[in-house]
Amino acid sequence: MSYEYNPSKPPVAFWIISGIGLLWNLMGCFQWFTEYNFWKNPASRDILPEAMRGLYDQTPAWTYVIFAIAVITGTLGSIGLLMRKSWAKTLFLISLIAVIIQQVYFLISTDTLEKLGATALIMPLVITLFAGFLLYYSKKSTAMEYIS
Image 1 (spheres, rainbow, N blue to C red):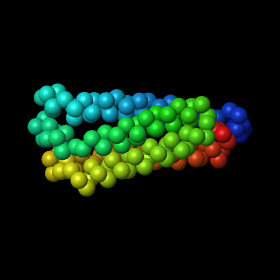
Image 2: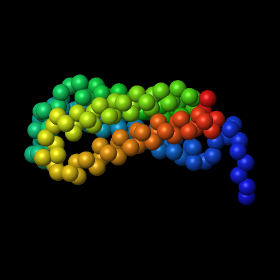
Image 3: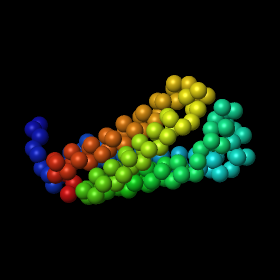
């Protein structure tokens, strides 16, 4: 079976990656909703470990705005990728910038690492790498003429 390049028909991997990107960002939207509600409703934090409860008290409101921007633009970018639209790149860039702002704040301005240890770095690193990958992939898809 030979592979023939056809820009009007992206490979199956394009659809898989685009779909995973959408699912990832939809999970991010759910996570934002959960995190925001823990922050907004101190009584709801009873189910959390003690170390986590105080972190919500330290978190300023603007970080939830940045978080929302990151997941909403990531979700819309993923939808754009599935629609094969070049504007997906711009949304992924905005999402990545928002993710970086959020993660830099997390690392510099909170005592999360002291309370939760180095394993607290794993998810922020994965989130940042995935946001960067989606931007890279959207640019590559444009170059391969999968999106326009």
